[in-house]
Image 1 (cartoon, rainbow, N blue to C red):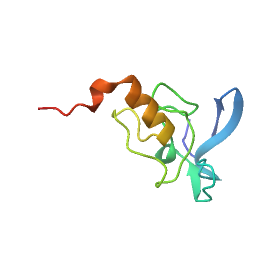
Image 2 (cartoon, rainbow, N blue to C red):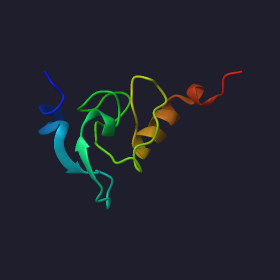
Image 3 (spheres, rainbow, N blue to C red):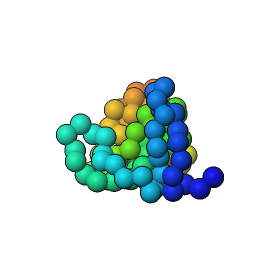
Length: 93
């Protein structure tokens, strides 16, 4: 399978995904043109996983991820992950 265009299931709905699928940022009110490629994905897995919702966001609304498995997280998923994993917020010595 290539990553230009494929179908995924997210929240019980089939959607088109991939870097060749144009869309807009999923942050309410944002009109930034993006694609549904992995670079814009919240979490590590298209469709959603323990790291994110599987939504697609522009650079302004996709925050860094706390784990290498995920490329980024939207703000609600970042806050949820931080609340569930407070040990990840402590700095290493």
